[in-house]
Length: 430
Image (tube, rainbow, N blue to C red):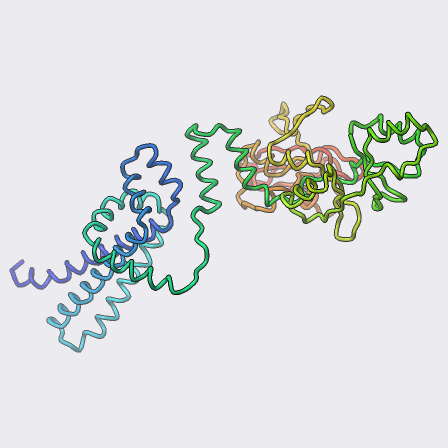
């Protein structure tokens, strides 16, 4: 190749190099904007040198973005100028308009859109690999970027913006997971913190004792019948209804009743012993209910449905168990909610939450349905059938086969869950 040919190719080679630089800056900008700060911080705390540079870049985010914008504009303008000069020299001014259009399209796709799409999927990898170079460029362009950043802050100060969120909820979950894996937190501590974050999203409907399991006293029962019912229960308080369970008129403290019964016998009147019931709608969040119960010094709340009927009850213990896990006392019978059977399937209590069962089985829900987090297995199973199921009826959910194993008065009590192989799942075998 002669010198003339080399000279004619030089502008195009420079333009290609500038296009690659534009793609590099676009990748870096998107990566540092998308990366999880908590994950980078965790790596930096472990002494990763690349993460330490990335942490520096994230700590000076405005300066980093300004530096990248300066570099991006330089290479874009330089590429456009070089292409224009090369086209003019070869084809004349008449071809400049067409070359400008083609250059704009190429720079947009190859230098902006495509690199940014890739960078978003690998934000952590690109942030770690590019932060060293970016840190150097930040030092080189420090005076110019500082001046431009100051101008930007001054302009932003003229308007009232939204409050800045320093750490998102997803980043908090990532940080808890990282700390648990590293051993900084043990598993129980990690679960407790995660439960605290989810506490405000749980409604009373997902933790209540349903009306079919509700132990309640009829106001018209004789003192002897009431005493017999109290002896058959292990509760410190019982709701009292008149006519129907949907008409709860008060809450009876057992110790009050026994004290009055020993003093007055069959001549006692139950109504003066009743505490005023607290009625709460099923959609109420438990973080809203707890302070209400604390303020009113009540241990039990009656949960109502959309028609004012009794849906169930919730106690303070139920709310606390949602935060710290199961609280056992000497009267509780310890039963495993998920038990592995000899054939490899699992016997599951219908009152267990779907998310807890999935976690214990090691099943990753492909649909990632957030509504299933606090849904009970029995309720979820009912939704899969078009009619009231019978023992032995089953359905398949991806790689899970769920079979109704025990029912009582049209209510599902027990389920059997089996993990299917890929072959069984694909063939739809039972």
